[in-house]
Image (tube, rainbow, N blue to C red; front, side, top):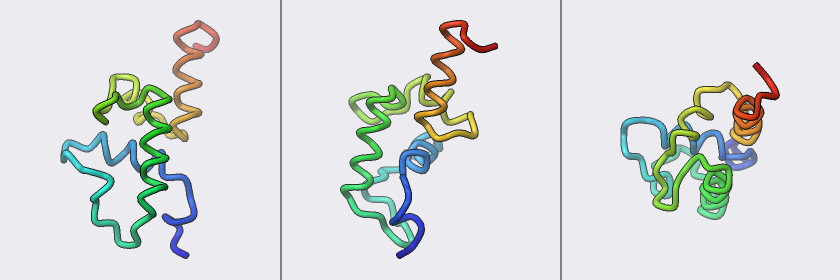
Length: 88
């Protein structure tokens, strides 16, 4: 199976949503499309992390997370630690 069908899509979905192209990730024309369930799960995770709002728009936190070269859950942890003064 293609890599996109085996790996987490959270980072990919966040990246696509930060592009200035108004991409609907559920209907995006992937070369090897992942399952709708995988995409919905990625969107759910991004919402829980605060990277997207209830309408699916990227939040300020989501933009900050996307700038970091980390998985979104790790990026959120790093940003939260910074806000709490745990890291510089």
